[in-house]
Image (cartoon, rainbow, N blue to C red; front, side, top):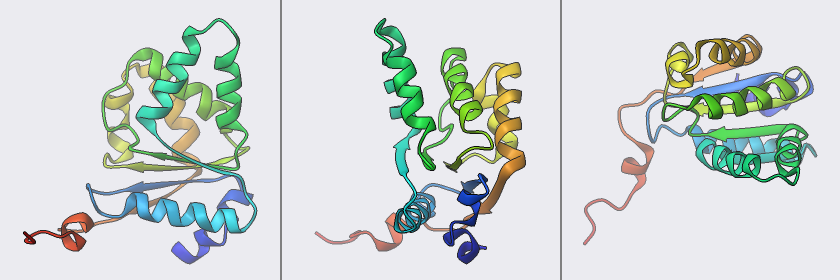
Length: 165
């Protein structure tokens, strides 16, 4: 599955990837590797943590200069968007509405990698607003490859400098 995804066929077909697993399991590392592979195939790739994306778009929404629409466009026109720390915290209705705009604009026209500690079955609760949550999940879940990265020990713990003085 990893080799198939590294070929970039999912981007060509406008499908998504959901990388799920505990903290330190390597989700961000694998997402970055998929991103590098996509760059080598001349796809446009953007990596951002979800909290940073929501901050940027929330601030742009407050401005009355059209920067919100420009910002949305920036995130919808890349071939591969990597969203790290997906739904790590509960979202407000406004934040969920912003995500709906992005997922709607990218649905069936671009690919997204979602890195999450939460299984998609628990995303409803994190998204808050039931109607918006249903709309977002409907655009993501059915067009996504799901990969569970499991492990007992965090990669940071395993490869860190613990014990050095």
